[in-house]
View 1 (tube, rainbow, N blue to C red):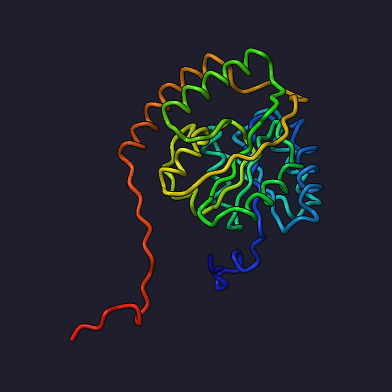
View 2 (tube, rainbow, N blue to C red; view 1 turned 180 degrees about the vertical axis):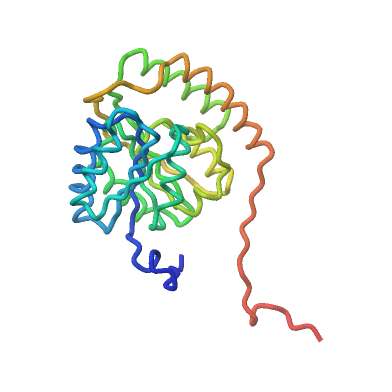
Length: 259
């Protein structure tokens, strides 16, 4: 990918943008930001973009304080609560790097896994545009683990996306490929299927998972299931109706010269 040097933001772009969507995570974010810094400081150039989805618990003030002495931290805030997928998209649109890493704001994803995702990308084929975290050992309640297992089983059977854990928040993907995907609420749960629909390959990478230290989960099992049914029907429609085309630019000496 050629960098646009006429744009100062792109000319000075880091190699990686880390996007963290957050809603009411004031107690978790300072430590999470420190862990991201520790994981990437010697690995690559980076920026951190925290997207506050109109929190009402002091998250805005916490992020403002964190940004005072962290030039690598950028803070976005939604004017109204818009959901995790919208927060993710806002962060990706604002990002300066060609590649994006994401983590949930609750601290359950381990930033120490970010270099592992970067290593996976370094050894992968060029057409792999999404590296999805796979929580081999979940640190959630038994009911949440069972609900997730059932949902993943149904999704995998219907979508055939060959991804054992689409709900994991830690991922690495190409910015341009992501922004080409259809945008809708909860789309972040279907990124592997959507990337494959667009003609790209995806790869699952085993990662760590940690118990939540502060606050409460923003999702309940029943609510997640009811929303998931509607979302799954929509994604199935997209897969059936979707087409993708990749065009290669031709240069003058490749074109047949007609009389």
